[in-house]
Image (cartoon, rainbow, N blue to C red):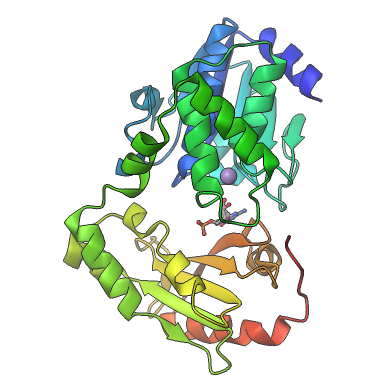
Amino acid sequence: MMKKIIQQLTTSSRVLVASHAKPDGDAIGSLLAMGIALERIGCEVTRYNESAIPAVYRFLPLVDTIQRELTDVAGFDTAVILDCGGLDRVGSAVDAITTIPTIVNIDHHTTNTRFGQYHLVDVNACATSEIIYRLIHAMGLELNVEMATAIYTGILTDTGSFRFSNTNRAAFSICEAMVAIGVNPSAVARHVYGTYSLGRIKLLNLALDSIEISSNGHISIMTVTREMLSDTGTQPEDADGLINYARRIQDVKVAALIHELENGNNVSRGRKRFHVSLRSDGSVDVARIASDFGGGGHAGAAGFSVESSLAELKKTIYSLSEGFRGTCHLN
Ligand code: 5GP
Ligand code: MN
């Protein structure tokens, strides 16, 4: 498949590269590295992401070339979709992107729907950035420090700094190679983890205070409301990573972060829209739980969006522990 994809890309002249809305380090890193690789082989490249790039990733080289608007898709031969379990994960441009003649799907989510004509889906890859590294290598290209920084950041963040269950040998070997090319690990870490605004620290305080736990101690719930964001002057992206505190609690098997979204047009009274992030300690497959709610992800980290009242949603999440028979063992 890798050969066929390289063949498709080398014969394309205008290529769209896009990754999932509300991007994380892997969505941005894989997009930036792929963008440079495509330009190297002579493609005219448009880099697209629906959402604003979180402040902690704005240090990445060429990040300003990512555009949030997609006006005319008629001229693209090929779309390369990165880190998306389903094509709808790109956001509101999904219908426009569907009209692009060839779609290449590169991803590592267990719930990937195999959309598009070409798939490069490896659920054992620690990050989409790992797959992009292998693809760039197979294209016969040398990585420059810009590409290396993007790949390194994608792997560092998706493995939770080499702590999560997706941390594999490739994570270390590729990051070692990226450092050899010139990536500065402490500089990347300072940008990604060491630059909290005061508001973000205040949000952390409110979020920690919101943690509740089920009576059997197996489920923890953290809540981040719109009000908390406005009180602390923070953005939704400032809640990224907070769920790890809820997951660290002793005996917790599944941690949920309920994130109140901006209200949509058609939400009925008393109900709101929420994104729920799920993390497991390795004994429960949260991708299966998220799929049941129309979302997806990985066995150890997944998510979904719902319309509900907050009280009802918490009840639903607490009731999940009855279904923990469908457990798995992550390595
Ligand atoms: P997070 O909880 O940080 O938003 O996402 C955790 C993982 O689940 C990520 O790999 C993300 O791509 C995936 N994920 C989160 N929300 C959704 C969703 O609504 N649909 C799908 N298919 N995957 C999701
Ligand atoms: Mn990823």
